[in-house]
Length: 132
Image 1 (cartoon, rainbow, N blue to C red):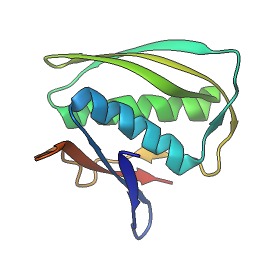
Image 2: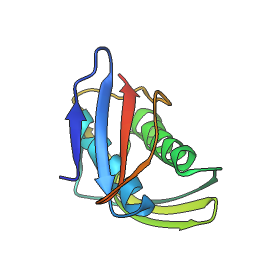
Image 3: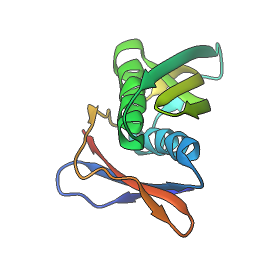
Image 4: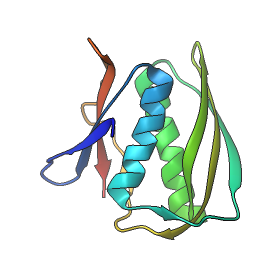
């Protein structure tokens, strides 16, 4: 798993790492699903295209994960397969998923608390705090 939970006093915190920004977004979504204990139905599969712009990787990450929180909360749909394209300040994600069978603990929001994508010797890393 290219992510791990980090102890946090009130909310949940997740450290994620990947080779590039597209991988970091994808693994962040998978980590968020893992934290929430999201289980998806096998069928029927659904597809959704998400597009946004942002001035930096942090903005794209928060917008993308917030879209996933919206679908989980409002549509009872989770996504676990992501085709991510990033060009300049534009993010396009083709997401595939299904209805949620269960969620152990709902994530209310993706926060901006100390979010910073850092370059490391192994690629990119970020810590994300989720409001639960």
